Each structure stands twice: as structure tokens, then as C-alpha cells.
Image (cartoon, rainbow, N blue to C red; front, top):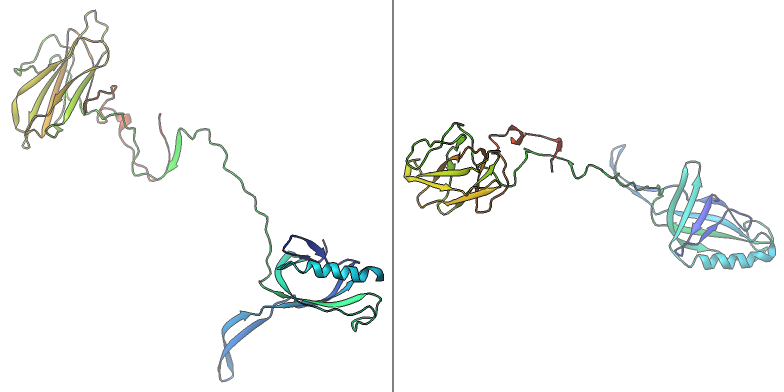
Length: 315
């Protein structure tokens, strides 16, 4: 590429530094400023600086031989019809661009020019710049690499992170003894596992479901017993205990209880009859889900506090 290349609005380019179009003696490639000052005695304070539009003027000799001179001029004039133009100026500091519009192009005769006496057309060409010099930089787009652990790891900012069961288990282990609280308050017999919940906040009309999973290898299937006791806002007992017994199953099963009017709290005692043992889950609603321990009973489910960083989530 020559030092001076013109591009028009059609994307065509013309090198004006060659034997066919020889440009020389350019002026106006620099910058001129219009400065305003405020004067105080012999001192001048700059109050405004504005760059002038700028105009480049250059001589062009058309045609490498006399017979090509007029044809070359005609082709160049046609090229200039598609504006705006872009002057591409290549120097040791890089390639710089500046957009412009044609200001003037003289037309004389061969041998009639006052610039230089040659047997070709030599004309003055001037363009008005419409913006400052700019330098195009090459940009490359790089996509993110695939993350093979995207389904397992995440990065973010959290206040707390913890494993959340499908449905929260409100049954909190308090004791583990041979017996459960029967309807009359007497410890029942023939039971080898017992757990008692803490007070659970309830709303009258809510449905709660008790779920158990039998884990024993005993020859006789066990029976799970759930004993409910409801309390008022002052945690005073409301009425007698209510007992529900499940069927004798070795898979997940449940018994339900609707909170009576006036109740604000509930406590539950559960046990197994016929030498059984297993796990209990008390959850809100009327759809039983698989067993998960309450967060208070399982340290692995206690929420961790994070300000930032990575945390592994277990599917």
C-alpha cells in the first residue's frame, strides 16, 4: 500500500502514490486549533480550544504517459463521485484514517499547467476533513471454554448456602428409649425405638403428615405408632392425645393429622411395635416425600455462611 490511498463510499480504493497517479507536495495533514483567551494585562488565559476542520491540498500528475493522462483524470473524477471519501495515510507510526469530502479538483490542459511543465495533466486536488484522524485496531472475539463441571459447581455471592431437602422434616430427635407415650400417657411396651419431637408451630386447619420407613430384618413386620398432642398459644395442652397407627408395611408409608381449631403448637411421640425400628419424618402438607433427617439432627445439612467464592452443590 502506498503512503496515500483514497477509498470511496463504494469500497473502491485508489493509490495516489504511483506512476499512473503521482501525488506530491501535500499540505494540511496536521491540525490547526482555534483558541480563545481571556486577557489580564500582559497575561492570556486559555478559555476555549476548538480544532479547525482541516483541509488537505496536494498536486496530482495524471497518467504514466501522455496518451493516458486524460483517461486517468476521467477515471479519477468518476471515483470521486461516491462520497464520503476516506484518506488512508500510512507512516512509520501506523496506518491512520480520516474521512473527507472533495473540496476542489482543477482541470487544465497538457502543457498549460503553471505547476510544472510536463506533457501530462498536473492538477491541484483538495479535500475537506470531516473528523479527526483515527486508527483502526483489530479485535478478536474469544468465547469461554466449556466448563465440564457446570452442572455441579457455581460461582456467586451468597449470605448462606446449605443443602435443602425435598420437604423439611420437622421431627427433632429428643430421646431414644424402649417405649412410646400411649393414649393414656403410659409408656407402651414391646417397642424398641422411641423419639419425641419438640414444639412445632402450627396453624388450625393445616394438614401434617407423619412418614416412616421400616428398617428391621425381624420376621414380623412392625407397626408405626404416631401420638399427637396439640397446645394453645400459651403451650397449654388442648384435649387428650390422639393416636394414629399405620398398617404393617416394610416400605414408605404415612399417617395424617389435621390441626384442630385453637391449636398453635404440636408435639409428636412415635414408636414401633413388634420389634421394629426405622426412621420418622414429620412434614407439612398431605403428600409424603422420602425420608430426610431434620436439619437440626444432621450436621451436613446445617447452612454454611459464605461471603464469596465457590461452593459445591450436590445433586
